[in-house]
Image 1 (tube, rainbow, N blue to C red):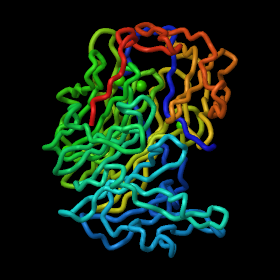
Image 2 (image 1 turned 30 degrees about the vertical axis):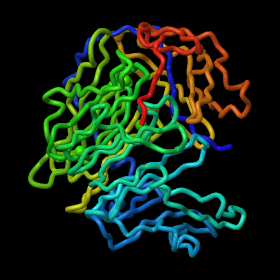
Image 3 (image 1 turned 45 degrees about the vertical axis):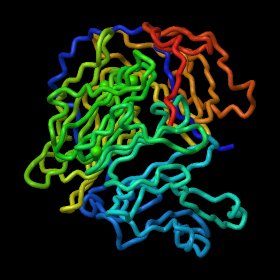
Image 4 (image 1 turned 90 degrees about the horizontal axis):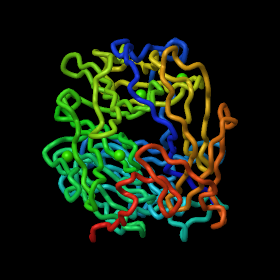
Length: 467
Ligand SMILES: [Ca+2]
Ligand SMILES: [Ca+2]
Ligand SMILES: [Ca+2]
Ligand SMILES: [Ca+2]
């Protein structure tokens, strides 16, 4: 069964912080666009095939000029499934303005649905959830019937849809859905365990009703095993919602500092550890539409007692004050083990894509996880530590959870470095058990399931609020 895994816990053995950050004022990003994309392409950015998503949608609100499209490689070419006869009268090829989308394995079966954050106009264009109708499909003949299951899943709401992210936010392993919306409260759809959802955004404190969300990202900023939410509001205060873990009630707290929250015409938000120092950075991609608007970069550093510390970094060439940034992505585009930043532009004027590499790499030893269709790839690379740097965290084990709750744990040995490790979905129950004695890092201890959890959490039973 093809399944994709979500969660990975790295158990840090030793954590020595208190490094000297003498390089803080040095710029973080330098452009490598010229070496990554041939110059010819730079003059015609529309030719670049930078969008891996297979669904394209239209703009504005309510009724749209173009229907959604869902391309499948079939008959030697990409064909639009929504244009197939079988799907014509199934309420799936909406002529509705869409803004964002995400894939969600809502039942943990390994089959994805596509969540579509539409931008409604009145009662036209609720959020949609498209998936394959297995009983009406015949894969061997290439027949794929699609259904919009938004209503049965409880997500067919009308709003000014903007950003959407999917992950085990407040559920243990099943995917929840967070939408930051415009002119209306945000949604946090908690997975009820059966593929349906309940909006608990107001209950947990992330509804932000007066603000207009744009880019959004999920990350665990304080590494307590609970997913946190960061997003930008259009010319409004940006949010860093930390999920609280000190009581039974699920709540989020905005820990954004004044600088971090400073309103801007934001389009994209990315959370990643760009410089490999084991602390996450947040990148805000701002669009220059009424004068310059520089992009910004913050580091969110864990603190032993208290909320993470947020500091603005020198973003370097990725500031792009005149950039009409509309999208951005993070990946290791040149395969050198360091994350790179890719920024797209457009909307009000054509501008080339830009690619940046990180100039301030703290450590050249990383453990990076890439969820694939069948496995998790763990990529170790080693290198020289910067002169004078203290010892960094040591990853001692890795644990992978699948949406259906199965997990695999295994120790990490020094010999695992510089290798790609593949961890497969455990088809048999007996494989799906922690097989190692786990050594937990400071502040964590092994719970009854053999997993590391925050000490103050280890005896807490999770009681989800009733719908
Ligand atoms: Ca909102
Ligand atoms: Ca957290
Ligand atoms: Ca970092
Ligand atoms: Ca790279």
